[in-house]
Each structure stands twice: as structure tokens, then as C-alpha cells.
Amino acid sequence: MSEAGNNQHTSITPEVDAVVVGAGFGGMYMAHLLRARRLTVQGFERGGGVGGTWYWNRYPGCRCDVESMEYSYQFSPELQQDWEWSERYSAQPEILAYAEHVAQRFDIESMFQFNTAVSGAAYEDEHHRWRVTTEQGDEVTARFVIMATGCLSTANMPDFEGVNEFSGATYHTGAWPHDGVDFSGKRVAVIGTGSSAIQSIPLIAQQAASLTVFQRTPNYSIPAQNRPIDQSMVADIKANYDNFRARNKLQQAAFGADYPRNMDSVLEATPEERQRRFEEHWNYGGFMFMGAFADLGLNPEANEYAAEFVRNKIRGIVQDPATAELLCPKTVIGCKRLCADTGYFETYNRDNVSLVDVSEHPIERLTPSGLVTNGNEYKFDAIVFATGFDAMTGTLLAMDIKGQGGRRLTDKWSAGPRTYLGLMTVGFPNLFMMTGPGSPSVLANMITGVEQHADYIDAMLAWAAEQGITEITPQQDAEDEWVEVVNMRSQATLYPSCNSWYLGANVPGKPRVFMPYIGFPDYVTRLDEIRAASYEGFATA
Image: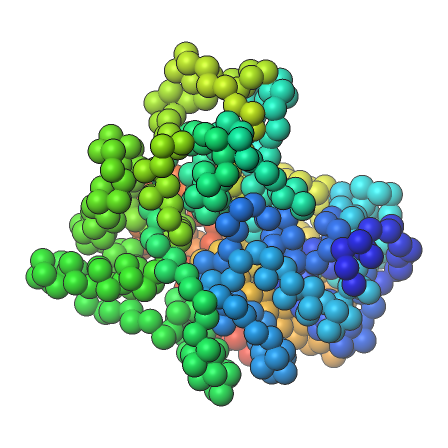
């Protein structure tokens, strides 16, 4: 079904076994599994079609930073064999086309009502059911609610003074116009230098009359080394896809098994070996750079060697020394999500591109004709907010979710998210979160993560049905222990050493809590142990 076919507000089923919120890759597969078990399902999606983050993020240059052969579903061997990718790292239009193909192939769209945002969900203690409401006025009751709302699905719009006074066009990379934007002849500002900015700036610069980038914090970025996909590699993988998937699941982030991850220390290498190894991994591209040595993410001294290598690459690419230094990050490399680019730093050599540092003199306000920083007004025809997302928790907390006794999730998580396994939270029975805080989520291949969560939730619901269980909720001590485990694992790394969206540091007023669980294989092993112990740590009724 095309997006146009989803635009009508259709009738819903008022009482179902399960409500699934979100029709991204997680919600689609979850709904597919539940229907296969003959449960009634009502899905809601605020967008006009499937695809989740790939439906909303259509900015220039948007593409995945996990390779195409890995960023794909595993549940259907036929689908794996049939689908053909065109590039090493797929661009947004191709990934969206893949999502739409899956939805049509498995008749998933029929379970969802599109253009429908969920406004709230309230647990009815006496009935052991959830009452889910939408902004359109729909109301559905269900035994189970599965929040497949994604980790990066609520755009973080900065609250600048005068933000509504600007008379030109404004855009957010996370909610891009579906028919695209023509910047030809325009004076354009991009605010932010995170992943979406790093991907879009080179292409915007090719169109715009002038492009001014406002940078608060520079980011490390490694060339993606993107190219047309190697058909001989595709043939090799498809000949033994199961083995390929199994090897990737043993990696910390559940991808990249065919690239070397060296187990020695950079501190023990000679200068010549360090340089050779870093060059080799720079040429692999993207995340693979951090596999050059084993201790880059653990030891500040080791990390500095990698960081300075990348800084020297930036200095060698960017011709103006002052601009090059502004683009050189001072933080450790990898504490924020490492970016992958195509021609990002080279773009600053263009005559129509300039960089403004706002780290010491933040943007003061927007005006009808532009913006002001450090007392200077810059005039523009268009402003692009590449300011990221309220990650991991933003979409969940934007809904009015009330658990047992009417307690709101916003109150329970006022000091930061607390979950058991990143799947559930105490006091909110039968409410599941796919790739929620406390799971590997954004530190792993997301499609692998959502499939693992969907399979786990499905198995838990099947077990509950066999046992005659109507209510599942974590035990308080299990949740407390899991929160400590997540914290301890992060403290053993350099992740918490800088302000990143992993900690919510990009959203003013958000509690600073490191949210993902580090290590996909360990996570899967622990969840399998819990399942084998009849879902240890969960209370049932």
C-alpha cells in the first residue's frame, strides 16, 4: 500500500489482545509475530506509512551507518535471499522502500491505523487491562501494550528566543518535508554538527548560494567509504546467511564480524604500527575505525592516540588552519556516537561555506531575518535545525502513561529511566518497551535488537498464556539490580566521559543517566538465562 493509501482515518478494533505503538522495524515485526499466534492486534502509527525513523528522516544524504547486508530482517530466509541492496550503506529512500516491501509482503499495514498519534495509556487495575487513547479521539482496551516507538523518534527542537519570528523557512532534519527542499540560490544556516548535519551539509552546500554552519561541539567523523555493493560479497553472504548472522550476533554491537577487531593495546604498539593500523581502519570506514586496538574505548591514554590521528586527518583535509582547529574535537573519540561521512570535512574548503563557533557565545535569538550570536546578526533565507532527538525516552514520556494506582511514567522516571532488561518497568504491568533504556538499543544493530526483543516478548506472552497468567511486571529488586548493572558496565568505559545524547545531555533539563546497556552478546545470554529460569525477576498474577 502506498503512503497515500494510508491517509484515511479508518475504523479500529476497540478491544484487542495487544496494542502496538509504532510501525517502524520493531513494531512491524512485533505485530507480525502476535498475529501469527492468533492474537488480535491494533497498531497505531503517527506517520502516514511504515518505516519509523526512515519515514521521518528524509534530509539530504540520510543513510544508515550499518552495512546494508546486516541492517535487515533475519526472520524470513526468503526475504533475505530475495531483496537486493544497491550500496554498501543504504540511503534512506532504499531503506524506506525495503520497509514498505516487508509491510506489503507480510500484510502488516492492515494491522495499523496511520496518521494516528497515541496520546496516553492508563492501566485499569481492576480489569488488568490498558486503555489506550489517541490524539484523534480513539480509545482501545488491550491486555498488552508494546511500545515500539523507537529510540530516535522525537525531534529535539531548540527553544531559542524568537524562534517563531524568523520570516524564512525552517526545517528539522528529523521531520523533513517529504517532497524535499530546494536550497538553490538560498542563504542557508545549519545549526548543529551531529550525524544528520554531517550527512546533509555536503549536499546542502552543493545547492546553496551560501551555507553557514553553527557548531557548539565538533564531532569525530570517519569517511564511510560508501560504494556500490560488492556483488561477489553478496553472493557469499547469501550462500550462508545463517552463519553470517550468527557471527555478527557475537560482536559487541551485533555487526561487523568480517572486519578485524584487534585485541592488543595501542600503548604497546610502535609508532609505526599505530599509524599503519589506524590508516587501515580509517580506510575500512565508519564504526570499524574503533577496532584498530582493543583499549580505545576503555583507556583515556589509549584513546588519545586514536583521537589525535583523526584530528590530524581533519587538519590535513581542511585547508584553513583556524577552521580545521574548530572542527577538531577535544573530547575522547567514541564517547559520542561516531559519525560516518562522505566529504564532510572537504566541504569546508568550499568558498560558499563558513563555520561559526557558538561554544562560548551561544545563539542568542532568532530575528525576522536570521539569528544573533556574540552580538552579530547573520541573515538567512532558510535555517536547518540539525539538533537531534530526545533520545530513548522522549517519545515514551511525551505520552501520558499511567500505571498501577494512576502513577505516571513521567513521575517514576523523573530522575532518569528505570527498567528491568530495558523491556519493562515496575508498576506498569503488561507494558513492554522495545529497545528501551537499559537494553543495547542504540549501541547495537537496531534491526537485530528489535527482532531479539520482539521474539523475547512473543515468547514471554506465549509462556504467560500457557501458565494462565494475566499480569506480568518486574520485581523491584530485579529492576534495581538491573539499573546498577547498566551503570556499572558504562562506568567501565569512556562513554560517560562526555556530554552525549546517550546521557540525555542534548536536552535541557533532562536527567543525566547513561541509558543503553553495553554489550549485545552478554545481554542476549542474560535474557536467555532469565527465560530458562521461568522469567526470573518478573512477578506474575
